[in-house]
Image 1: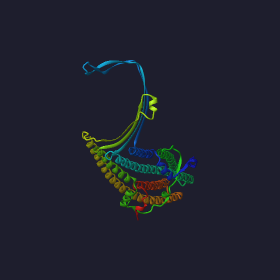
Image 2: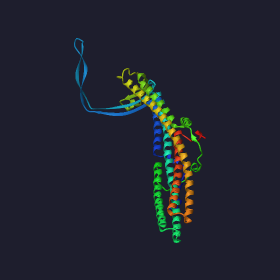
Image 3: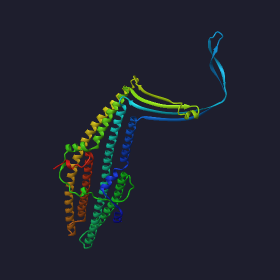
Image 4: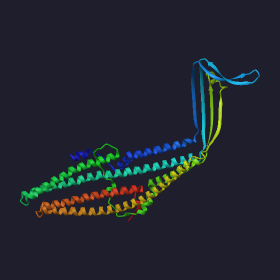
Length: 442
């Protein structure tokens, strides 16, 4: 049944997983953040262009009979004039109002706010692009780890299936020796129990494979399915002796890691935010021009020789005192800049610490992997020798089982340490922004 499932499962390579991980949910969110940053920059660029408003209105006023008081002159007999209030009756009326307006306004100067804002949004867009690269690398690293968990689980299943097959052979050998009177009944029962335990381990490992596959595809944002994880070329390659130099890796990280570009762009944006706040200390100058025409009737409105009104002007506004609000804004921006600079320094320190830890972990994993490979060879040799002694009637099934258990554990340990080496290598690659072979020392 397992063979049929493996034949039906599609192969899955590490390259496919890396590519798919760059489109998982977290990476897509970071990509959307880049789009929003680009829109913010376009919005900041809008002040470079004139603002044009067009209005067109047609209204009809219907008035009923009304009495209003108006001021009218009154001439006395001696020639003096006085003004008195007199009631005036107004009959019902209908009056139209046709209006057209066109206004053009252009900002000329606002204390440097607009060009600093444009530069700041550009820096924030650059930072968002760096954060996208960082998130894609983080998503890729997690996907690599989960891929190797699937590979480890599937290779572990093969180890356990081979162990079960050896236990089945041992059971048949025990049965033959018991029939020939060369083994005890206890040896036969022990061999059968051991085979049952190995089959239980196989069944449990199949469930572990399903869980590992589900975890991988959940991270990739894909529906779960049965796959056969292909061994990457680096997984098959022998481990070469050597260690990474932490200083060289940090130099590589400074050159290649998007994090440093993000920090630089954020620092630039913080400094520009201070300049934007200071722009309120300076005046604002704008130019405007407008054209309007109004008329009570359509005939007058369409007459090209009448009803025109043009306005052209330059406006200067200056907030001389804002109740210290500008001072507060500048101080707040300066505080945010100081906090950002400290975060940058802390991020650099943390990266250095992570590289030191990752370098040490990589060296340790390589050393452990070498020892695990040696242990496996010795355990296999011990098992073969014990199996031969049992076949000759010079040992017991319990001794063979102990040797087999040590061999299986040694093989699983070698497999796990090899996976740990690849995960540690991927983590180091993530920290430095690329392959680390150039930083290895013999």
